[in-house]
Length: 239
Image 1 (cartoon, one colour):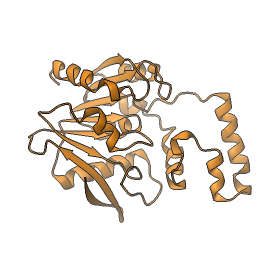
Image 2 (cartoon, rainbow, N blue to C red):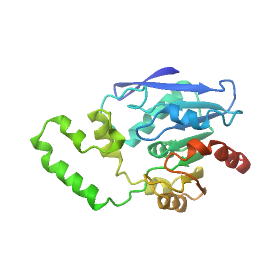
Image 3 (cartoon, rainbow, N blue to C red):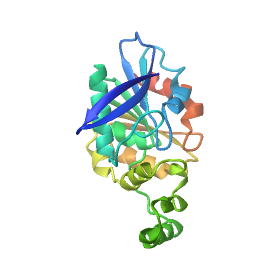
Image 4 (cartoon, helix red, strand yellow):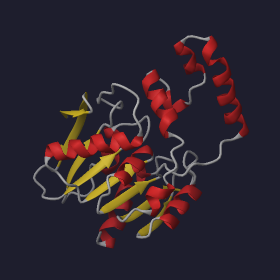
């Protein structure tokens, strides 16, 4: 594991990353989802794509990477872009799971691999809308830590800063970004995904002009068991 200091708008971010297959000439970048870290992506793909160098990165605020304030997805992408420039690396393909899929899309790679990506806003259930309304009503009456009683499982154990980031990014509609995506895109989805439903993947596939869609067995973390299958499909496609 290594760390790289990136300064953006006067704020320093200490980014934790790991490189595999260091001497391979072409590079793949793997970006994890919300509440996750680089180790999950390495678990899925560390034994795949042996002819390529792998970079596994903890996004700011996750794993062993630092965060200083509330940012949005566009800023995450800018920081990752600065990180890649600091390493003098241009990945031939970028993988993004869930929230990482949005960051990966904004990086505008030549080849994009989306794994149950976020970015399509799904209408909230009545239960969730009620919970949000109650939180907004009681928020002025209670201390800062009160948010934890209303936080989703995605932010259990995380700081208030990360909770505020989640609130900022969760409703970002990436329809325009998908429509204007020029990357050759491969979209993989878990058939039993409940966090980002299969219909979201189908919508993304309909928006991105150069895309192929694959529904595989499993839930939101389907790729943990399907890494080799994903490798085979990508290599067969001659990406």
